Length: 269
Image (cartoon, rainbow, N blue to C red; front, side):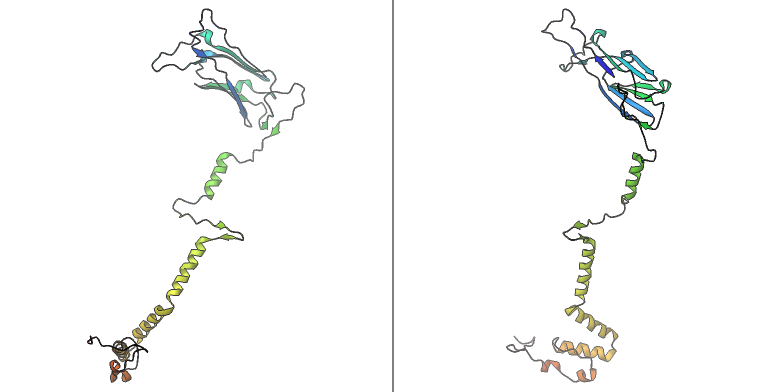
């Protein structure tokens, strides 16, 4: 593989004070391949079809000849762009005289854009990976490796990733954070706390109130009257369900206060 890039000679009469109006650009080259083709990309700005002097395809050879236009130097805003003349362009030749394997010249091609020229070489034997573009001079090269057709391409891998993603309408699950022994499921911990709070509500005073409500709801009329009278007249200290006992008893007179306290009526000051 040979590459030549010859800068144009200085024009006679060009003063050092004025300096050149352009700067030379050097093409940048990259290549890649698939099982069917080789892709060669030459990054060159402002190329025109007239700048492509030759693009030759042969079974074991490739040659590209260009005239590389220079890049304009930075100028003041509004200043006119200097005209590029033929003598300002730099000849560029890229040539491979012995490709690693044969190509099909009739199915090889190139395309041109504002920033690059792309060359596509069709492999004569598809399905194999070339270790290099050019065959070694000593002939001791690694053989081309077959490209496995069964390997998944990027689109298939992306589809699998999308399948593992949660639908948009599904609420995201809480992460399980690792600890020193095992992962902590915060969803389960939150559920256990809620269950414990519900169980706490069934203990203590709340449980007693619920029991009284159940007794009152299932009682007959006499039992309800006994519960109301005993509870109200005793100041909340007695709750009886025996109407025969409560009917003639005056709990207001029999209310006793705890030690160190005394009972006062609402009518007392």
